[in-house]
Length: 563
Image (tube, rainbow, N blue to C red; front, side, top):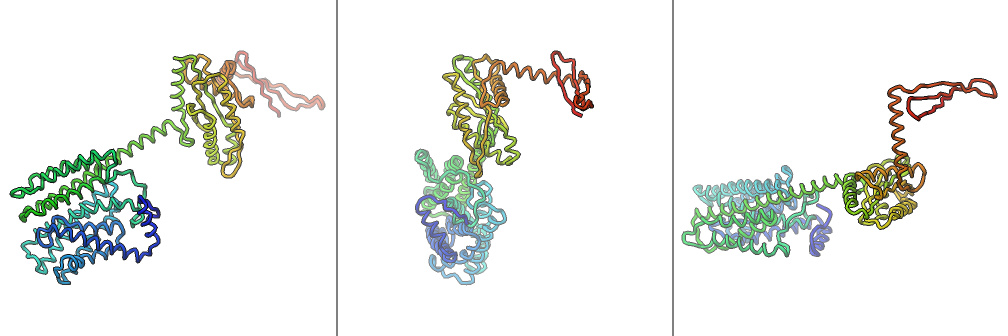
């Protein structure tokens, strides 16, 4: 049993508390008693629509056999052995012989118990019928194959005990099969769907959270459509099955049209209510009419066809809706992963670049509209990772992201570019000093320790600031300048630095120097001159000084080698 109480309302809570503290044996007796009482009531109802002894338009008590085992488990199979005694002793009083009842009970119990055990433990369907696979196997095994096998064996037992002649074996089998199949299909899915609201009663728990489903009863905004659909369905039933001379069933397709619409429009849950309404309405319409034997078979199989079609189409519609939702969720997840950082849930480089480009274009149109970029980089983050572990480092980054968010306005954009690098886009600035105040708020927040896993950690950061006061050619230029200012802050060990053109010139010069040195090494343009180092105190040679000179204009590098 599942351990939680998922039913709606106070009644469900009361039932759950009673269920949890009731001993297993008492619970078993209660369930069997309720099953037998409900079975007898449905049996009496089915007798009101008998067209011949033991032949009804539909036979819903068989649905309770299926629901009992699918819901509460195979251990309730012995209860099926009692229902025919209830039928013979308390409902019909036809006084069948005990050997006839024994064979009849054995056939019913083995047939329907075996079908349920096959569905639950071999095919492993979800008995709550949430997926198309569950619905398809249920209709095939529980509503078609099992009733056919049980009906053929029941008819054989009646002919063997000379209750019906062998000449009527095939006809009786068809009557029993159609009645049981329709009875199971019209009621069992409805009950199984309704019992979803009591998850703690099921013998087999669900492995995953159920998908969102359509309810059998409409919401208030759906009520007008619900009434129109109910009216159309009622009209179709009246046209198809109202009494006329000859009792023709040539207009049953009028029922298919609204039932198919309801199934495809609202899914399996609403379809179970529709087929229940169809079967009861048809039974009451034809109750007072005398049908010929052939028309009764046509009536039964017509109802069976409508019922199975509506349920199957409802399962297909629900499956399609679940697939579409899964695809939408998957697309949303892909979109999220494309634009957001998986660790901190902040925007990533792609989304930040997109918003920076928008700010850049807006700044081109309205030059007075200032914006700024802050580049934030943690100091000594590698030391934290190496000493405390990468998992701890990830938690620190998450905590840092949350702390940075508290320092910003809702309209500002903060992103994680990767590692311990964060960027901030400040738009609609009123003054050039606004980014400085934001940087100071960030530094003040970082002055407080992080509480992670019961351990206090202090972290500092270097911040580079770039303002849109310069004439930038590309959106990424201001991000580059903020990055340069951040490295300048690291070098000077200051809290933050504001970018200026001197920083850019210095960075370009450094890059040029590194490029020329690498090319000089590749071209072997360096010459090494050694000159001795002599100790004045001892007069002995203590080492060599190596002078490395190259063919690089205005560039000289010295390297000391101590021997």
